[in-house]
Amino acid sequence: MEHMDLVIKHGTVATASGASVTDIGIDGGRIVQLGGIMSATREIDAEGMFVLPGGVDAHVHLSSPRTGPGIHSWTDDFEIGSRAALAGGVTTVGNMSFPRKGEQMAEGLRRDIDDAQANSLADFFQHPVLLDPDETAMAQIPELAASGHPSIKIFLSFKRFDRNVDGFLRAMRIAADVGSVVLLHCEDAALMGCCGELVREAGLTEHRHYPETRPVVAERIATERAVGFCEISGAATYIVHLSSQAALDTCRGGRARGLPLYVETRPIYLHLERSRFDEPDGAKYAGAPPLREEQDRDALWAGVADGTVSTVATDHAPWTLEQKLDPSLGPAELRQGMAELETSMPMLWSLGVARHRISLARFVEVTSSNPAKLFGMYPQKGCIAPGSDADLVVLDPTETRVIDGADMHSASGYSPYDGWEITGWPKFTISRGDIVAEGSSVEGAPGRGLLVPRRPFERP
Ligand SMILES: [Zn+2]
Image (cartoon, rainbow, N blue to C red; front, side, top):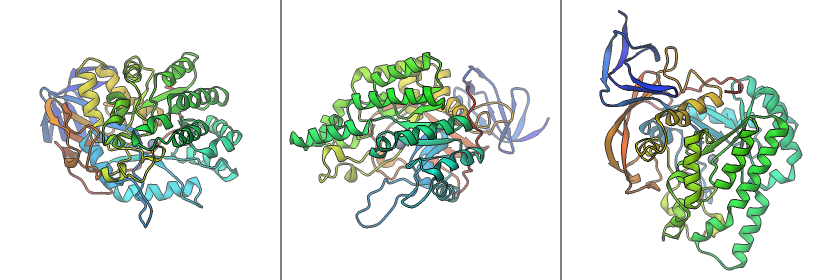
């Protein structure tokens, strides 16, 4: 009998294909044995607990905040954000890498990789953001895909998109040829600009009018275009943070026609509704798109349950309450994003699996195996099998905590779910065989996180 580094015993091991009580043997950072007799230096008794593949959150913003007079930036960087991730059971994060002024995609990517390699506690990958589809950027898409970065992000919500739709479509054709997944932020820039003007002209200055500046129609129209771009270019197309029933129905239609179209939603759209903006400090819930109605929320839960939604990712980009509630900001100018890395998996468990809204298998797919497959990391990530990285969450389905953002790892100091009672939290988070979190306390040095090598897209 081989002696191993770590054995997790008596836990219910959940994968995308089922669940059973099985012991897991870990050695050299990898899973080496499932079931059978094994002994190890350290043993975790997971009796009564679930052992899940570590979360793969494909959408976070952890690039170092920029500082300086008049510059406002989110609060979390790779060190802070990856601590939040590990405490919440997320072992791999996918960061949006924005080129700065004068930088090309590849340079911005290099800067963000260096930053993450020095500071992240969690494994990571990067999505280069395509801001300008010029000749240099076009030439970089194949180079990036071939060197382990087979994804690009495009914002239909930026005015620059409509100034150069031809160029962005050409970029999508190149992405299709080289197996690069195209992530699309689907809100129509011109419609939002117009809505912002209408709100201003009507003298509506309160933050609660934020949703009127980014209505469902702006998301639906952009999503319809995205489905068309997917169909014509053939690129694997991943709609980020989809928020409304109308946009979901558009995607369901495209998927039924067999398009390589994938939908991400975000915890806030599963747990919160538009009426939150009527609270006195409603601006703290501002994200893009805004919170929608109850029927949208219910449609998204149904989409997670029936497979129309492929992934749940956080879009983690937190700000302090003071920054969010800044009275100098008009309703169209609110700072978007909030802290969700530490709460995403426990809340999806508590309000999804425990309430029988989604199955255990769907939980594993949307939090781990689907993003790992779509972004070229499976079965190294997103999988509990011999040979896979030992990225695991031992989740205690009986532990109840009341969420208090002031006590969590994000530097934002609040959670949009403050005061919510949630049952089902990670007891241990394990990354490549290291126990990196026990309860909410995180162990591990900044820089222990590794860049995950990725392969070009293959249709799952
Ligand atoms: Zn984002």
